[in-house]
Image (cartoon, rainbow, N blue to C red; front, side, top):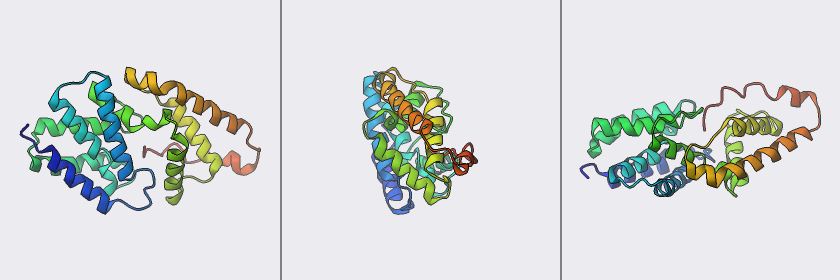
Length: 216
């Protein structure tokens, strides 16, 4: 392959390791590496065998949250700017850069995948929603959002989770088979928590400001 995937990977991993805020408890380098691994696994299960497609998917996974180096809200667009500025230097063609950006853009909430590779990256990005480590990972996101004063309380957090899980869907047959049922069980548990939450004025007001959150 004429484009230098390994060099592009080393570059962005070093940038993320050096430049990401230490309060990105969820969107840290660990999340990026998790998405890379899951995307590779999903691609294999989904029957993707084309070498170029697999390498571009890996690149998109590595760069999908690179925008957090420069912005929190709207990080996908910032990530695409970084991709356009960086990948040509590693031998990626204009068409390949465009495909990588399309995959990254597809992960923006609400997800809008238009290709099979888009779907795989979207499912890899939110794979944890149906995994046993959901609680620990979602707690890291809670701490990240509270550090930015984007969540007012635990009740508001539960409301946000319930809304997000209710509207989210997996796109690939593999992710649906693996993760949909556990995700639904988690949603049911959160809805039960909300139903049993003590009524108080603070809880009634907690839902303000939830809709603008588009950082996942």
